[in-house]
Length: 170
Image (cartoon, rainbow, N blue to C red):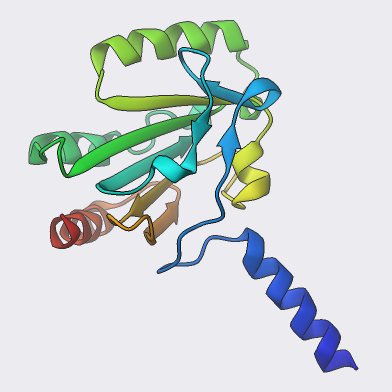
């Protein structure tokens, strides 16, 4: 009986967590949970047909992976095969939402090829079990499968590992 209960418990955990090599459960960030800068819903179903790097970031940790962002920029990947998504965890900071949203609008103007999304309720922390109060970096292949997931600051070795992974999947 204990084995059956443990098996059921573990299988339920895998429904919510992100697993390398799998397409994550589809989520839609909209309404009270947030959405894109222009107010429209964002769906994880858009993560396909390109290699995507998704940043899920606490605004207080926005500079944590600047070296990785600069390395990505230097690669100058074709927008036909590569995309970036930045999701901001608005609930992870004491900063007022209006100030963050204003900064995001400016960033969207500066980086028009990045999709910016506001998460007002830690929706991805709950649905995908992403690390709260952190800088998360996720990479998806063209099929939408997760091929990399890291929370925290990427060191030089990790940056090179991720770049190689992206290069190999483009």
